[in-house]
Length: 393
Image 1 (cartoon, rainbow, N blue to C red):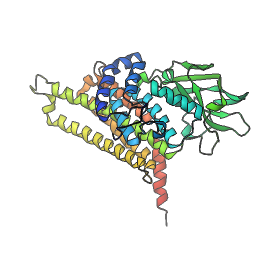
Image 2 (tube, rainbow, N blue to C red):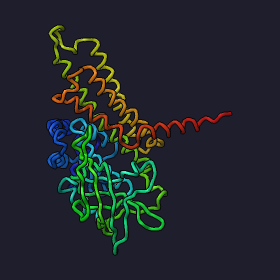
Image 3 (tube, helix red, strand yellow):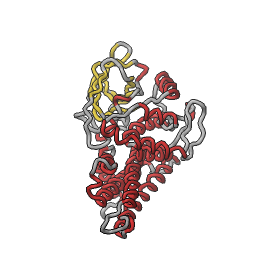
Image 4 (cartoon, rainbow, N blue to C red):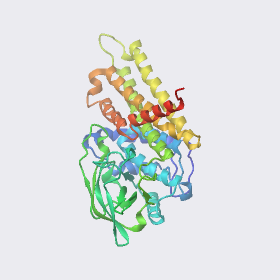
């Protein structure tokens, strides 16, 4: 990490403090996975370390961390507890988006920043809906904003709302009920009248992320708590900002590479400790296991380097770098999943036993496949672009 100083109010993350944070999260991760809950204490730890506000803009008194620093943070948190890391990622991405292109109204932004300086404040954008699916594939949200007096009233149903019960601010993507609908984010505070979190999350992995459903029943939103609205189809409805997409793709890939790194580290310890009586030596002494570990190490090292280098290129504004982030997500998440699956195959039943963390790492890393952009979208876009470069004679 390169961020080492920040104005008062938002402490800058200390690069040498990340291993301790990883260890503290890892110590409780199994319990959180079993209970499918996260205590606020985890985020208080991150807040004290400056990790929740690392991407707050310098103009707002923040460290102004870029994407390269953010992927290092998320890789470290993912190695400790990926549920904590995923909720943190959403907050970091929100601050980073505001740093790049201011869009929060002045009043709510001042409120967000003042609270974030004092305590952990968690933010997430609620976009996915039962009928719509992922908004990046097109479509108008069914969540509707209706004029009520000088403000708005929101009604709708959001799903896969990561960290919903812990969030302080919910950025609800909705369409107006105007003849020509506009879309945008409505800034909703937790505890607002008509807002209900339905605890339906019962997932294979990332169980403690509590990506529950959120119901909105005529939730009032003051006029000054609405981000700029745009006409549907004008570019503001699908989240197609390349740089924003790169933050999402590379940040989440780093998170899952952190999971895979934790799985690899557990595997190394197991192979050194496991000494079958028939062998009389640790499994780590066998060439077969050494070569298998080499496969894992090589794949993860390459994926880590790819994500780090591309993140730095995005920060530098290198042409085309942001557009390559989707491909890096495909390569990086596949490497992470394959590494954990190889580790499980190497140790057999031990890898699928709940008292060992490898079983949890396997369940968690499989969640890498569900995040936008999904592999099929990335590969279709890349294939069409490649074919378009060469036309038949």
